[in-house]
Image (cartoon, rainbow, N blue to C red; front, side, top):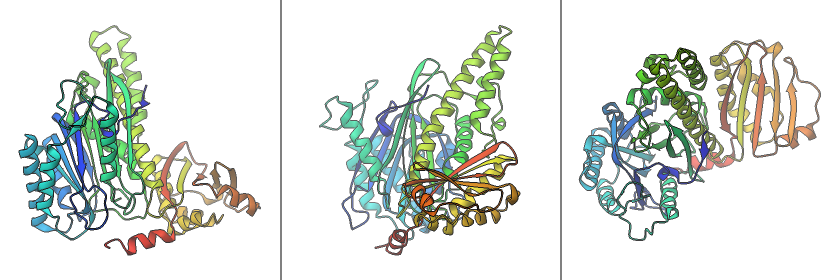
Length: 472
C-alpha cells in the first residue's frame, strides 16, 4: 500500500542536500543553487524536452542518463544556460568537474540543471565557488552510517526535512509555492521510499513547462526497466499538463534509484517480460498493464512452480512501484498546473466515453490549452461553446450530436451542452459553480469506455504582467 510521508527528497535512504544563494540573478533574496548527492551511484532514468532547441544542461544530462548511473545533481535558477552554444556545454562540464572534485564522485555521473532566462551565460565562477561551499554543508537523514556534515544537525529528522523543503524553494523561478512529495511502500518485504520535488509555473507544456523534476528513491531496479516505466507514466501525468502551450528548452525529469532499501533487484527478466511490452506512449495505462501482469503471474503459479512464485512476487513489486510513482507524478503535475503563472484556479478537462485513449487525450489537451477556454474560466463565464469549439478543432473524431459537457466544482455541477446543444440553465447557478478555485469540464462523447484527464489553469492579466517583465 502506498502512503504519503514527510521528508521530500530526503525521505529515501542515502541522499543528502544543501542549497544557498550565490547571486546568479542579481535581484531577490532566494537561494539559487542546490546540490544533491547519493551515497552510492544510483540507477538513473530521465525524460527531456522535445523542443528542438535544447539547453546545454539537457544535452549534458541526456548523456549522463545514457550512461545509466548518477551520483549527484547540481541545479541553478535565474539563468537557463540555453542558446549558449559550446560555451554553455563547457560550463556544464566545469560544474560536473567541480562537483566530482568536491564530492568524490565520477564527473560523468553528475547531472547539471538550469532554469531561468534564455540567452545569458551562467556565472560559472560563482557557481563553482557555491558548489565548494555546499559540498561542505550537505545534510541527510542517517540510516546506515551516512555522514552528516552540517554542524547544527542534532539527529532530529525535522532539521534535514527542513533543508529538503528549502531545496524545493531554491529551484523555484516564478513558482509561488514549492512542490514536494514523498511516499512509502513495500517491495519484496522491504520498506521503500520515493521523495520528489519539481519546479514549473510558466512555459509549461511538457512534451518530454519550464519544468525541472527530481525523483529520488532507494529501490533496486534495472535501468532499462526504470526508463520504460518512467516514460509510460510521464505520458499520463506530466505530459497531460499545460499552463501556456509553450514547451521549454530545459524540461528535465530525472529518477534516481540507489538500491539502499535492499529489495531484490526488479528486472524485466524477473517479471517475465520484454522492455518493449510496456507501452511507453501511455495509450495503454501502465497501471492496467501491472494489474494484468500480476494476474497472469498468479495464474501461472497455480501449477506450483518455484520460478512462477518468484514471478508473482516480482509482479507485486512492479505493481506497487508503478502505483507509488504514479502517485508522486500526478501530485506534482497537478500542482504545477494549479500554480501556473498568474493563475487563480485549476482547470481540469476530463473526457470520457471515448473509443480509445488517444481520442480522449487529444480532446482533453485541446480544451486546457485553449486561450479562450482559459480566459472564460478566469472570468467565471459559462461560455461552454468555447470548450465545444476546442474539442471540434482538436483533430480528434467524435460526434458533436452525442456530446455532453458538464461543468463541475465543489459547489455542484451544471450541464451546459447536452447532445450537442445548449440547454436552458441558470446563469446564477453557473456563476456559483464556476467560482471555486478548482473547476472541471466533464466531456462525454458517448462512443466507448476510454477516458483521459488533462490539467491546466485559467489565463489572467497577471500572466501577461509576469511574462512582460520576466527578464527584469
